[in-house]
Image 1 (tube, rainbow, N blue to C red):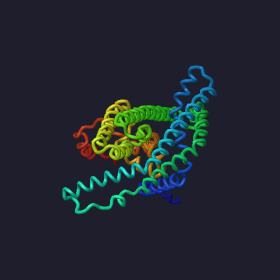
Image 2 (image 1 turned 30 degrees about the vertical axis):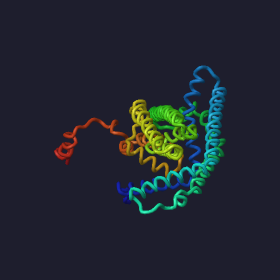
Image 3 (image 1 turned 60 degrees about the vertical axis):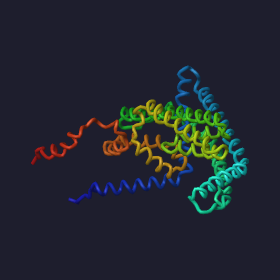
Length: 366
């Protein structure tokens, strides 16, 4: 009888790791194709409840789809126009901000010389690089143009995804070996994703609106631009709100001085504390099911793989991986590691410490 080689756990671990690296390399190389597709799925998940609501109220499917797509196109055009006009005006006023920034920097450096912190005043003009600022604005405009170029492709994908949603469950039922379980997991993922997207969108809108009102009160230039940026970056977990606060804080410093700049910073901290740390967790409840560390690591990993799109969609993508790992018994341990402590059973310290002793006391069968 021939001996059949059966790989051990160590071999399977190496094979699994190699497969994971190969998949990540493939995703990284296909970023230009995968990123628009993921954006289309995100928009479809946000639009599907509206379309289903219209269909349930006896609106024909073709009319429901037309209304939803009209709203999406109109919203995308409005947001892109507002951001484009604001960025254009901001780039035109950069020389003025450059002069003000130079004056503010010079005053601060003179104060540092007066108190003995530095020996002499350095050349402020060489310290403040206007070309770098112009380059940053140019890159932002180029990114906006690139996004608008993919808009038609993304909207076309959204149309096809929405058209396929009503029969997707039937396809899963036919293809799956265990249809009931598969449909249960798909329903769970769909409900969790829709809940996360809707709540996150509402909280992002609240954050952007409050930031806009704050900047209007303090009279910071381009409040609408910074409000829209606060809305968009609020989708990026952990660091998005911090990044969104930096431009208006610096602009307030250039326009008015440290007092108003500090007011903007305090206002942003208050907004993010109330909306992000108090209201949003209560509305989310336990539906997210991801640990804080996993959320941060997913931001880094998906951001590296898919760029800004990966950062925006890091939480939904990780939720999808978690639910997919939970389906199979062999990969459920990955789902447990990705999950939060709220999903674990209640085990006291005594039970954890006594578990090895109980295992050792069990009689072994001959």
